[in-house]
Image (cartoon, rainbow, N blue to C red; front, side):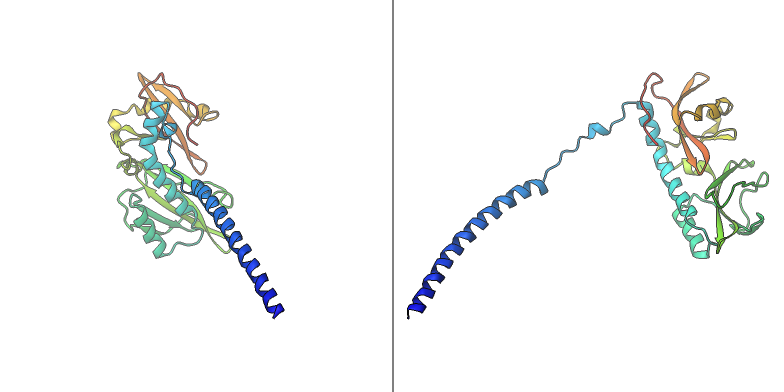
Amino acid sequence: MKRLIAFMLVAAVLATSGCKAWYDTKKYMKGSFEEAKGWVDVKPEIETDAYEFENPNQEKLAKLFTPVDGPLASMTRFLEDKDTMPDQEWQDLMFVRFPWVNRLIVTDVDGKIIEQRPEIPFKRFSEPLVFEAEWRQTFIKTVADYPDLGPELYIGTPYFEDVSFKGLIIAGFDPRSLIRLSPEPSELLVIHPEGGVWAVNSEDVDKKGLLEVPWDEILEENVQGQVKVGDTYYTWLARYLGQDCYIYATESVDPEADGEIWWF
């Protein structure tokens, strides 16, 4: 009987202690939860002014070329990722994902066309396309052609069988079709140094003057800037497809505006 009473006393002590411990734990957890809630359930305020351009010329060009450059970069990656002979499914996907691509060519190791879509292209080459590169080190190479029906840009990538180079996969498109993805196509130019100037309204552009700009010298130290052609100032930005340079440009809003390098 004494043992039973002793046991009951011990149990009562433990029960009393347990209730207090539970109360202290509950109080601590509640305080911790409220503190953690302040960390997790935050109400952020985004400072949109921090993302505004200080240079109106840069802002204008960014708005014009971004919807063009994004799809071009995506298509280039899609092409670059293919290093084996493209099957019908891959070819169909290329035209579905990038509807502005109007031509797909597969060559053998000697450059002979072994497959072409469409079989009879709308534009014919003005001269043979020459892709010169070390294909074990080069993954993207471009060639611009200038037939009577308008410019055509061809982007090629090598494909292999086992470890042997077997030929090229080449996508072709009219760069003016790509420019039309811009919200204001008539305001955007693409300059192919020593080649041509691509614009929706090309008759309104001083192509000769833009091509006479010493781009080779300028590009040695700069990837963006402003040039003056005649009485017109152009804000420009260089972009590379592989090692080949193409330049986005638009007429400057404020030739006096200045800013740091803003895109890379």
